Image 1: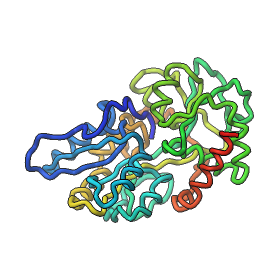
Image 2: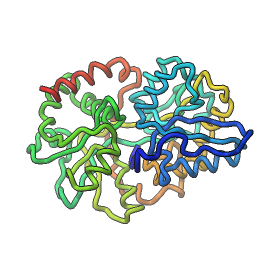
Image 3: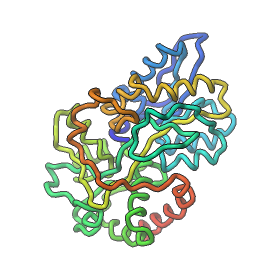
Length: 333
C-alpha cells in the first residue's frame, strides 16, 4: 500500500495480448497496480520478456474484492495467481482451500517481521498512517489518543473495513492499541469522521486531494509520491507515539490453475530487482527486498515508526467478524 487507484475505469483484462499461442498467466489484482502510472505495465513487460508468455492482469475493485471473487468462483476461477491480499485478509483466503504452496526461496526478503508462510509471498510492505495537508493543518495530532481526544472540528476520512484493506488496517491498529476498550475509542472518534469511503482511492483522490478534509487514513509512504513525483512536501504523514500498524501485501498461486509452474515463476520474479524496482514510486510502498542504492532518496524523509503494531494473520481471521461488528455498532449508535 500507498498511492492507490487512479480510476476504476481501469477495469478487467487491461493488458490482454494478441499473441496467439503463448502461455497465459491470469493474475487477479487491484486497480492501482495496473494503472498506467502503477507498477503493472513495467512488470508485465519485464516478466513477459523472460517467460515467453502473456500476463493478463484482471483488476478488481479492491484488494478485498480479490478475496470475494476467489470465494465466488471457487474451483472454476480463471485466476492462476492472486496479487494484492494482505496480512489482514490472507488467512481468510487460505481457508478457502483454493491456494497452493509457493515453493519460493524467501531468503532475500527484508521485512520488519520474520516471514515463514508457505502459501503467501510478500511483494511490498508499509505502515498505515494519517496523511495530512500542511496547508490546512499545521500541528497534526502526534498520537492516536490525541486524535481521538481532538475537537470534532478536526475532520478525517477513513475507509470501510469491510471493503478496504486500509480500513481494516485502522480497525486492527485501534484494536491493537486499546484492546477491549476499542469500541469506546471508536465512539469517541466517530464525531471526527467526515466520511467512510468504500476504497482508499475514493477518499484520497476524490475527497482529500480536493481539500474536503485535512487528514485521511493512508500510508506512511504516501508522502514519497508527492515529494518525488509532484515535487511538493505539502502532504505528510503524522507519526503517532503508540506506533503504527504494519501491512504486508502478498501474492499466492491458485491451486486449480493449469499454469502453476508459470505462476511460481512469477512469484520468484517478484523478489528480484526487475520487479521490486517498480514498487517504491509506482506502488508507493517499501520493497520486499533490499534495493540498496536504487532506493529513492525521498524514502529517507518519511516517518519511521518506533513501534510496529501487528496481529498474526490467524488472530485477525479468528476475530475479524467480531471486531467489524464492534466498529459497526459504534458507528451506528
